[in-house]
Image (cartoon, rainbow, N blue to C red; front, side, top):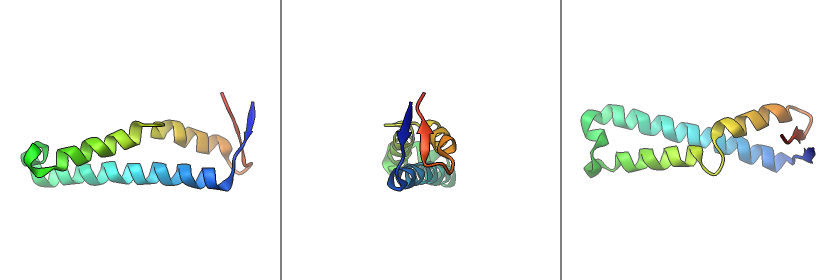
Length: 81
């Protein structure tokens, strides 16, 4: 089944994938900078990392969104499996 894809949908999906990937990378770096204390509750970094990972997985995993963007290509249409 073919579904129409708007420019806004493509931009929204692209932004969501980029922002969640950057959030996970940033929090991973923060945990590494803080070392062992980055995992401790007192710093708050562990909560930021959990939140970033949650956003990367829900409501749609990044790999699913990335595959959808690749299927869309330049045609402006996507095949729904």
